[in-house]
Every structure is written in structure tokens, then in C-alpha cells.
Length: 78
Image (cartoon, rainbow, N blue to C red):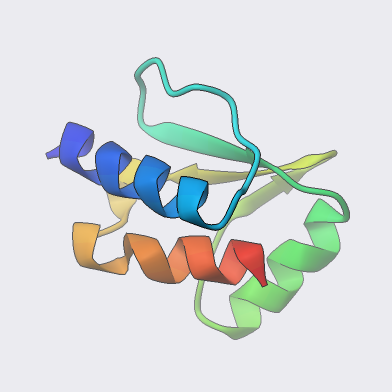
């Protein structure tokens, strides 16, 4: 189940040309993003919850239904 989510995540991120480290396993994925704290606040208003850190947004991919992954990637790309 997790691998299926990661495949969707990676495909959607590539389509949006988002920069992220290669996924090597685990339950969290990271997207490099400037102004991560401001971006996380804007995403929260859209119902997409991420953990901001300096220069990146982290998502517990294990807690996101496969059908909702593209919504999260779209929110990161906006």
C-alpha cells in the first residue's frame, strides 16, 4: 500500500516539476520548498496538512489515502 502511494506521489511531483529527494523508504516524503512555513499555512487553509521545516515540507505519506495524494501535490505546486 505504501509503495503504491509513493509511486503516485513521485509521478505527480514529476508532472509538477517539484524538487524532492529520491524516496528510499519510510513513511514520510519531503519536498524542497522555499518559504515552507508560509506555504504550510496556506495549504492548511485548503485542508492539506504538512510539516514545514527550513527549506522543505514533509508529509506522512502513510497517513494519506492514495486517492488524496494528487491533491497534496497540487497544493504544494501552487
